[in-house]
Picture (cartoon, rainbow, N blue to C red):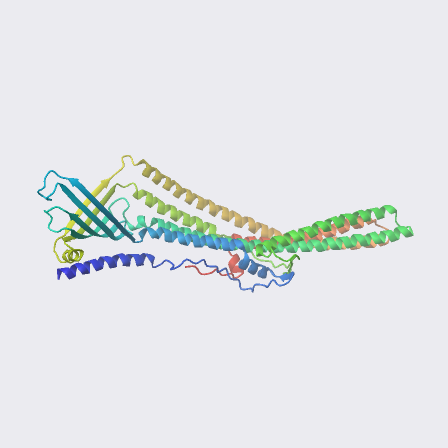
Length: 523
């Protein structure tokens, strides 16, 4: 009966090791895999099967979400943080230990009573195997099985060779320093908070990329509109040159009018070259964001935006924008997480100020026979055992390192809180600034549209006066330039309004919800 009790006890101990091990691994992934799932946009991703792509803003965003390298890089950072959590948990893994040792000695003796000769010969072999494990309370558990074989020519030994076996179960539990679940799980909790920060960075990166695509898209539209204005301006300058040549031939104008017209044509041609270059640069910037810049084909891919420059007035409530920004901004959430991390570190460093007081207890059962089998049978059938207990105390005098680290952690905690307060202030200023810019751009749309209409009417009047000989070509050129600038200012005001709306959404962290973009689910 006692033999069965011991066998049952050993099985319970083994099961506890395996149960704790499985429990610690329960929430860990069974295999390493990098998720390549990307954010999803409700708009279908356009196919790139031609050298000229008509693309809307939402399609450009879908392309960026599907192909942009920065999103993949940020997602991999999140996977790295997940592995760091597993790394911190690994210190609670069960470890299998084993060792073997052999020794033989031959020594001279002054007496022959014990051996029958003047030489004493001993040989020992030892094998030890078992498990060790640290648990979340800070305790170190171990269960070790020892096997020994001893051979000698001594006549005093009952068995030669003799075999001994022993099973030792021990636990060392810190009672002050290094004690407690909160302390021993601190690194895991910090790694978990790092993962949360990484996920916020991932969301922030997607918001930034979507906003960059928006800004780049409207910049391309502005460049294309500017190119059309330059082309039209060049046509008007050439037409004026043609008319001036006719009037000089019939004698109604002097030759200097032709010189003025030719100068204007040359300047317009130069402006057209610059405008074409600007279109290519803005197009390249957008293609880089949607990752279609590098192509094996020698021909150049051209992007043609499908969205129109329209104006729809919105109502801006700064108080609501403040509330959205403070509750959604990922950088503010990141700072909150940082405060929690610093708090965990303070508690960890505070524990190290305590003296070290460890309690160690062990239970051992052993046996010695003329064979291994008999030793094992004897071990689990006898009623002998050894129990020991020990208290160990240690305290560094002065303990300056621990005290310094504790003060440092407190300073870092208060630093994180001040950074959080400063970030809130910066966010409120950003919201106020971009709100003001958006309101200003709405007003400028009206004023620039009026200026464009007036410039158009003035040019028409100047054309009529020129046809009657009451105006010069220089005045015509000046009014054409004024109309071109007024038209460009109106287009720029519309584009700035669109860009300010994009920045307003980014500042209040509403970009993803505006475009109905959903992030992949994370474990």
